[in-house]
Image 1 (spheres, one colour):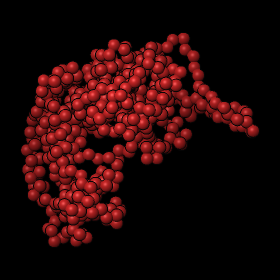
Image 2 (tube, helix red, strand yellow; image 1 turned 90 degrees about the vertical axis):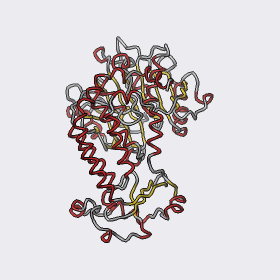
Image 3 (cartoon, helix red, strand yellow; image 1 turned 180 degrees about the vertical axis):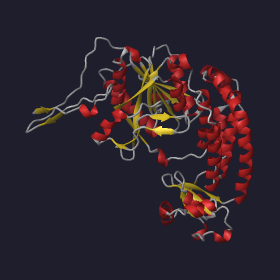
Image 4 (cartoon, one colour; image 1 turned 45 degrees about the horizontal axis):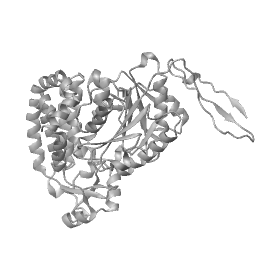
Amino acid sequence: MTEETTDLTPYLDGAYAHIYFTLTSEGGSLYGGEFLCGSDKVNNVNIAAVICTFKREKFLLHNHREICRYLENSAVLDGTNIHFYIVDNGKTLDRAEVENEHVTLIQNENTGGSGGFTRGYYEAVNSGKGFTHVLFMDDDIVLDCEMLLRVYSILRLRKPELDELSVGGTMIRLSDRVTQHEAGSVWDGKRLNSIGKDIDVTDSAAVFETAYYPEGNYNAWWFFCFPADWHEKHGYPLQLFVKLDDIEYSLRCADRIAVINGIAVWHDDFDTKYAGFQEYYIKRNELIMTSVNDQKGYSLWQARKLCASVLKQTIFQRYFLADLIFRAYKDYLKGWKHFLYTDTAALNKELMAACQPLLNDEALKEQYGVYFDEEKYKTSRTEKSHLKKQFLSLNGILLPSCFYRKDKDDFYISDLAQPRVTNFYKHRRMLHYDTAAKKGYVTKIKRRKLWKYSFLLFFKCIGFFIRYPFVRRGYKKHLAELADFEGYLDRMKNK
């Protein structure tokens, strides 16, 4: 067996270096190997790992079994340096099945990912166990428990000047297990820019190139480890329920985020998931996030987003979602105090009730006389665009009904999670269908909505430009109160 060396020059760039070896053998066997390093000084590290879950027992219990088995057999990780807190927002887990020496179960109201993760964080730092770091992990990931040891080792060996270092895990798509979705990301005040998107992690050259990626300013909470004292210096995460909470907290607190090859989790593709009520959270939370982190006002940009979002939902015949977007901007403009006293669980119930429910195939046939047609669906995914005609007619909304197509059984099909504008061109009635869940809902064109929303947008935008600077300053000024989780718990007890 002989050792080969590799020219590392192309992969060296100042602070970055990749060290690896290859072996060739003729008749030999490889029994194992390790990367080892020595250090005169190591840091004390004690991690509180927080998992927030809501009625996802299949994923959660699988990960629970793997974690417990790993910790029971680990020569390094034990009860003195890592402990898990599972926050059960659905209150469906059996305490006797989940709790043990490595895991504490916390029953919680359904306050979303923001509330669940923050509750676990709060309980951990107030447990008296002296945690130095907190690790947030999604409940629906597929976890290789070796990631726990790798994060622990990095933090143990970090240099003194990196006391504020946080460590993020990349996300690899569960659908094929080799395509990287994201290795950290950058929020520039207007949009999200994923780093390392669509990289094949089996391609060594592509993986080495990650050394030259820009450093992100946030990492998603599917796997994110940060100093436990952030709550003392910066406050707790804002109670945004879902969406953009991870971005906001990183922007507010993170000094430097290390996203390192070899620390990753598998997660379902986001492209196949869609929950309409989250449109409210995306719009409202972005406005709050840019306000409290003192990013540029971008009032014109936010007004354009309002118009574009409402127009898109109008074209998609999802008028109830256009209404939710209007409500998101309205609630933001009510100011920081309104957000401070919002009952997040009650609000979420209202938002979900405002959306059309998804019906199974039998209910769709019985109530609307529609059904999932495979041929229609395939055609909808490959249908050609008519850009000029669609633009001039506002995707057909301005055309008289006599120009509309004669659909078989008087309906057409669009994918629920990935609708295409072309699918709605000159179609009266649509089945919005989730092929994975085999559920959907039916909508039909309402031309009057276009004129109603156009009228509303004109006045809403004027009101937004007038009030936005004042409201924005209010959120920034009262950030300490918004990030006070103890105050939030007291308000929820006295509601």
